[in-house]
Length: 488
Ligand code: HEM
Ligand SMILES: *[C@@H]1O[C@H](CO)[C@@H](O)[C@H](O)[C@H]1NC(C)=O
Ligand SMILES: *[C@@H]1O[C@H](CO)[C@@H](O)[C@H](O)[C@H]1NC(C)=O
Ligand SMILES: *[C@@H]1O[C@H](CO)[C@@H](O)[C@H](O)[C@H]1NC(C)=O
Ligand SMILES: *[C@@H]1O[C@H](CO)[C@@H](O)[C@H](O)[C@H]1NC(C)=O
Image 1 (cartoon, protein in one colour):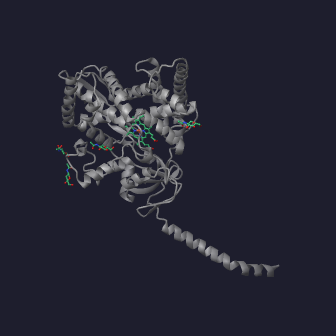
Image 2 (cartoon, protein in one colour):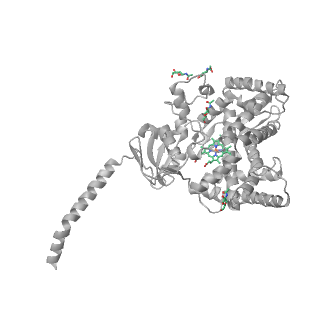
Image 3 (cartoon, protein in one colour):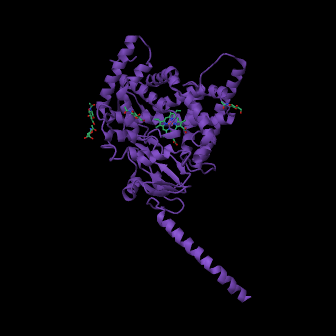
């Protein structure tokens, strides 16, 4: 028996030893060669999540991230949202991640977002289903529709908001901006009219809903997440009712009615009812929060930069004069194309304000970048805000300076690098589907704003990222009507 053991050992031991030796050698070698980005894991389980999400002024990256970049560099590892994560403040890596969507990296939002926006939401879908939903959204906001349909709609909703302001009154600019973009989206998505009780009710419901998107996904009575899920079903009930009405109309009449997204999705797509509901809800979400915050930030930054307001008034005064000469009641596409300095103001607002600060991705395959190994299965966060506020890319990054975007001002390599690093709308196959609409909304709103009013902050306020950008006090402003304008 023991003989046999010894025999066997003699027979098996050497290969086992060799295997063990190779195993140890290889893993040591692999660990040595696997060059992960530097960083720490933070506290057990929660990692660095709380420190990372700690509210900080929107025009900064926050102390936590500043310290990490100073210590580890622009690419570091961390533990966020319960997972090993690589954080990138590197413009090149951010672009690389976005452009390799579906190949090396993939969109991967925390489960709370999927729970609230729905499993068919465009923000969480990947692959073919994402492509199909995206096509529908892009068609809906095509250049043709922007010119013929959305431009007059945007102007109408702008004037509806601006004309409700009383001379020398004080109110929350953030709230007004939200009303503007919500009403515009509700109208274009499902033909709901502003000022109607059902639209206002939906808007209030939506505010509760929003609070849950950023909360921890704890689903029991009393939590923000629980309330948001209830809001989600209330909102879906309204949208569903609109859908039922529309289906009725479509079968009874042959006349074509409202050219809204709901009608379009019912007629031109194969989507199920459930899919359409999530699509409409996610467009309402993607299109309303972002562009309203961008507008509020523009109002805030401009208040602190009178020189830019003066230059805007000259640009828009000229456009209004031309429009009047033509005898047109509203702006046309050529007018919009002439808003050049306005586009600089919009870019600078998005660079400094960073409405969407980072996006969530996961790594699909082992990747090597700048000598670092980025392991498959990890999460990776491209942080646009950190690039937009990087002093090695933008001179005086904390200054609001719209002139830095003027093509005539600087056409050097440095300016080209700055333009190349600018990604407020993301990039690659998931580039924001509404970026052109967002620019149109901001430009048209600013057109009428600078020609109709002067404004000042009624109270000091500041935008914070928590992580969604929000003014602490809602940006209270006092407005004074300008009477010498030719805008109305
Ligand atoms: C200034 C305003 C806006 C900013 C800064 C912004 C930013 C972004 C960013 C960064 C993404 C990429 C998300 C990711 O890669 O995970 C995105 C996606 C998206 N945005 Fe916007 N957005 C704005 C306005 C709008 C508007 C007005 C709409 C219109 C409905 C819209 C619709 C969408 C949609 C549908 C997506 C998903 C695209 C896809 O996954 O294929 N956005 N946006
Ligand atoms: C709808 O589905 C049918 C059959 O499943 C398919 O042939 C058609 O191409 C689809 N249409 C669209 C717009 O996806
Ligand atoms: C160029 O930018 C600076 C600020 O960086 C600004 O003061 C100046 O007016 C701009 N020049 C032109 C020609 O617009
Ligand atoms: C603003 O940024 C966009 C990129 O989002 C760029 O294509 C455009 O040229 C910029 N506009 C100006 C006036 O620099
Ligand atoms: C334009 O580029 C030159 C060369 O890089 C730089 O010295 C100058 O400061 C830039 N001007 C502005 C207004 O950014």
